[in-house]
Amino acid sequence: MASDDVRRLGRNLEWMYTLRQKADYELDPDPVWRGHLQDVEGAAAIAQTALELARTIPQLDFSPVAALLDPRG
Image 1 (spheres, rainbow, N blue to C red):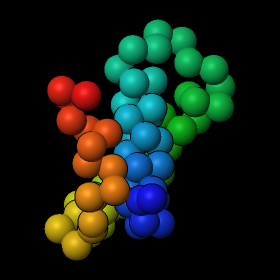
Image 2: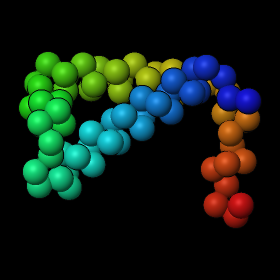
Image 3: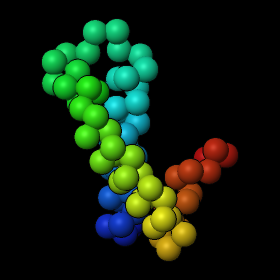
């Protein structure tokens, strides 16, 4: 089972990817998403979170989930 830190990283990456998808591909996002996408302070906080997460990656143990990432199945 993946550690709590690896799961937290996954949830944060999923959230950031969702924001990027909405920003790049949604022509008319609903008002809630529009608010997220127009929030400059929120974007700065997400960027800071991304930097902090990047610093943690070398210390994380991905061995419980590594097999899931193998493209050979």
